[in-house]
Length: 373
Ligand code: SF4
Ligand SMILES: [Zn+2]
Ligand SMILES: [Zn+2]
Image: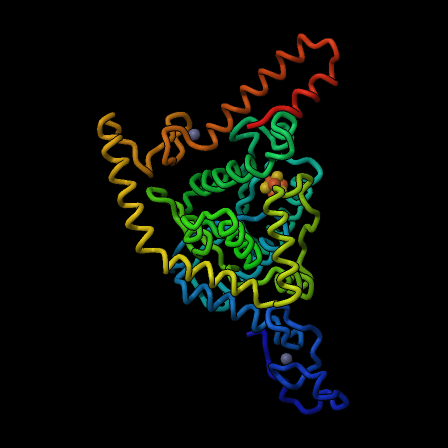
């Protein structure tokens, strides 16, 4: 255990006012206020409670089983760096008996992902863990920089999200690992809940608040051990533990709607710190309330779909494989292949227009500005 109550009276600071003492051990000087509940704590107690809370989340949700092989989605950013450090630490401390590998995706964003991957490579050595890197270029023959040049910056996160999700699954499949854990934290989850509520997308709430998710028919499950961990606490943990992480933002800003939801969350958190956890709990309970009604509606919808598709003698169901790439997909062609087909069309259109252009680069720029997907 890393936490010790200071029992030696010689080491207990004598001149501290009660208001300066840590509210957990009541012995050491408090050095920070926990963003989650504004409790004043010393560094040692902060490490201990933060690590214990993550451990409790893992145990109470049966996130791992003994002997399981687990891939940590590692980007070099604060969340995944703390995740890799902590999962290794907790695995040793509590003897989970899991086998850990770092799994990174190189989206091909010059000046961002290349630098953050250098951080992952250092982490690999620091934590002595195996590392596998899969790249968009190698899987799809496109880099994100090339995609943005064709599809525009407005769509960057849509492409990036779909390709990255599939890349992580493909990387895990290659390693014969069936569990990918990611550093999504409470702020990310609350943001997603808020976005789904604002869009009226109640059906997605269930997935957005689940700690473990798995598509029907997919052998790979995903989990988020930081579901209840505040982003600010992850940053504080990384800072006080002096972890080596990459802090530059992606060159392509997050999509406008998510950016606005993030801003809204930050404003709400400033007034009421507990709102992050409160929103997650609201999302979880909304799912429970609507579950029966939703199941009934889904059942009727499925029945109607069944009737319609049986007429066409289609046997395609969720869990089948994409006809083009063989990846698990609920449609005949997976989302990534649909996007790739759009990209290829746009690439040929641009090439064609560029060839016949009289105004050269200016015309290509105009074409890019007007392309939409
Ligand atoms: S901000 Fe968008 S483009 Fe950049 S890494 Fe994130 S999802 Fe990809
Ligand atoms: Zn303390
Ligand atoms: Zn496909």
